[in-house]
Every structure is written in structure tokens, then in C-alpha cells.
Image (cartoon, rainbow, N blue to C red; front, side, top):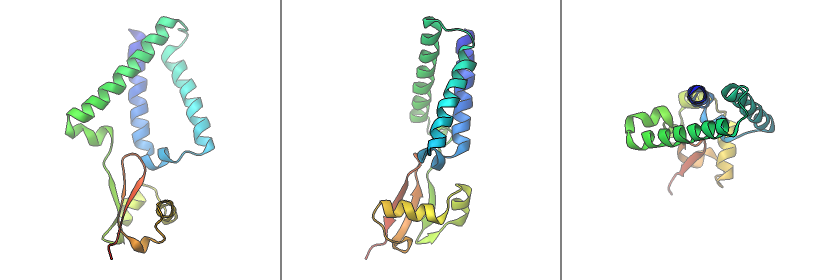
Length: 147
């Protein structure tokens, strides 16, 4: 039972940390971020299992994480009010062709990052964009001006 409780605490901590870090940072990992992720994984494993290296302990921890992952996905699906807490909301970055500076700053984005994302989607200039939305998965969706 101790393994399950430690796993639940670490799972909730990871949920809070990933929500706090921000979706944009998580969608564009640099090599340092990847190494840090591996180190965090090792630290989490040590914190959850402590000195329990048994197969039973491993199965218990993996099963608990699986149940918690499926459970949070189900809660997000079933209860609309929990969705912003668990997944976040899309954020409008450009509305009606105008940059929404408050949202851009809150998401810690630069104009250059938005322009680079637009170029990746074959949009030459932000002046061609009517709306840009930072989606919950960290990607930016663009709607181009018509005509």
C-alpha cells in the first residue's frame, strides 16, 4: 500500500509540474530538456520505489500509474469542468489580425517563436494571420485572412 500512496503523490506532483511548466515548453524539447526528463524519471523511480526492487513492486507502481493516467483521461472526458484543470484551455494569441500581448506574455512566447511556427505552416507573415491559437498540446493553429 505504501508503494501505491507514494506513486499517487508523485503522479500528482508530475501533473502539477507539467501544468506549471507550460504547454509550449513541453512541446519543444531541447537536448537539455530530454536529459533532464531522464534524470527526473530516475529520481521519481527512486522516490517511489525507494529500495523495493521486486517485480511485485514494479508491477504495483506501473499499474498505479496506468490507472491514474486512465482515470485522469476519463475524468477529463466525463466532467467538462475538470478539463481546464487537467488539460488546460486553448489560448488566443492573435485575434482579428492583432497580437494579444497579454496572452503571448503569459505563455512566455516571443514574436519570433510565433513567426517561426507560422513559417512551419507555410505562412509567410503574421500579417496574413487572422487568428492564432496555442492549443492544449503546445502547437499553434493559424487561421489565415481570407481574400
